[in-house]
Image (cartoon, rainbow, N blue to C red):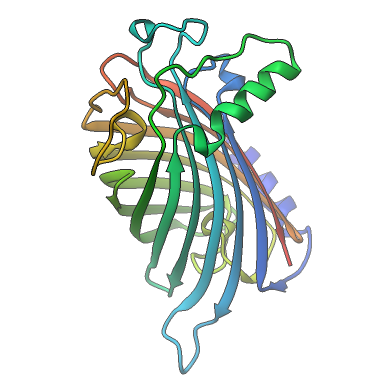
Amino acid sequence: MLFFFSTLSSIAQRWGGNRYVEQHIELMHDNDFLHFTDRWYTTGSFIGYRKLLHEIDKVHDNKSQFIIQLEQTFYTPSNILSERIEDYDRPYAGFLGFNTGISLTNEKRIMEFILTIGVTGEISGSQGLQSWFHSTNESQTATWTGQIENNTHANLYGSYLKEWLLLENNLNVFLATRPKIALGTKDYYLENKATLYIGNRRDMETTMAYRQLGDLENELFFALTGSYRFVIHDAMLQGSIISDNSEFTLEPIDSVIFYGAEAYWRNNVLDVKVAYQFSTRRAESTGTHGFTTLSLTRNF
């Protein structure tokens, strides 16, 4: 196995020289289709843009990047054929949101702050988009009975990442931890994530693992991830934390664990990421769930 990784790393190092980029556009999609399921967190689509504001220099102590992203996510019960709420193990929920923020990086850590503004309910467009998709392949259309009601949401997310280089040669090994906090009407939780990176990966200030811009080099590496989340409020199960009159809501499990494996490939101006992820149950009536992530990024 080590020989396999070392060979891939050597190939990656020969692909090309350095490039300097200041912007990128990312298309990312989550789906549980490859897990042969259509339930719980079933789909997420994201379009993101990043711009390098400035590098570290005599004036600036941090490498700064501006972030904007549009997202739409779907949550459905496992029984999408029934119109009876009594048959559901979780409520239908859809979210359409706009995220904006900033990433601050130096040689010791990365801090990231994100503001999210969005809507839930039928106005999120999730019900309409999923119904249209099912109608195109003649599959059963979900009813979306009793979905989390129309509401507006605002959320703040903050994270602090620190990592350590455990092994440095053709096969670099990094260990990273990333505590995170979410405060708002949609998400309210505390989380800590640990990631082990193995392969031809650059340092924290230039790697695609953290969507870094500036001086780039080709990369090929893999990651194993695990995180623990202490949940205080989840609007996709409970509706808004301020005021909500949804017909069907559930209390979330307060302890959720996420784990998975990821593969990263940066070749010239293209970044590709594929991930296979799982989460333990988010409500008493649900179970462990898996989904696949595909991300394509164009740097320029």
